[in-house]
Length: 307
Image 1: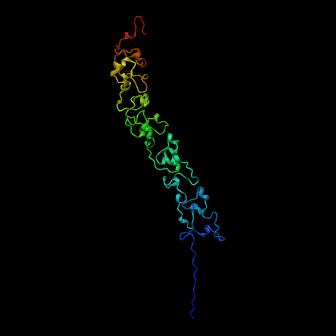
Image 2 (image 1 turned 30 degrees about the vertical axis):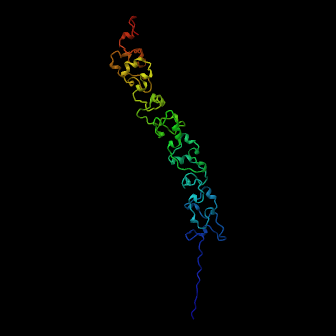
Image 3 (image 1 turned 90 degrees about the vertical axis):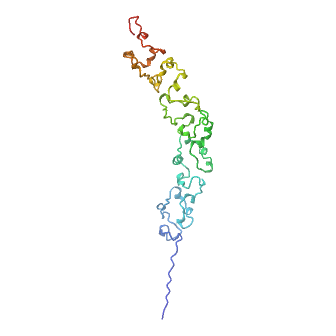
């Protein structure tokens, strides 16, 4: 007699965590009660999303709303509302940390974006540039000076930036390291006439016509230090006009270090004790344009004694 035996295979229960969940159940559960989860069973720090800062104290279900753990997005915006409304991108870690939402690296952020906070910008109110910062929106802004300082550019009268044809590249003359725009000017490329020694002065000392287009300056000393400047030494207006100023003077001082380099070719009188007394030029040159190298002009022989 044929006997039919039916074998019933028990179906393996499906994991509520999904078919791709490969972690051993005992890692998290205990046999006494499946709902009781081991406190330190699963090591989240071995995943691609370590628990740091305030994430350590968050209940698992805050992020894992279902039992399919791999469905969770690690992007911050998946759990946190983007208060900036997309104006600063989705990389929250650029400004925030898991310890606090408070931003402590504002200077570093600006440096990374190519706008270093120097001078007055270091203490400026964020709302002055980011006008919608009160709404936590930080739209992209132009980083050139003119974008924020257009009103100052148009209102400046010393010199008038518009009538003089100054461009809007403010950094040619101004720097961000100082707090006063009018006190700078060192940033302008003045290499065609280096501002060294006595020439390291206020711009208006030479640009006396407020940088007008009619103002014509050249690199000749006489353009600033000539007869029109009422030089007190008459000989400079006549006899010495044929010499360059740097034949005697230097850019550090008009009165010290005077050295007339052509004096050796002007007769033997310039020798002995007469030589080297540059600071006493006027002992012989008494402001007369027609000086004659004659001993009697300076020395009296009536007493029989030489000075």
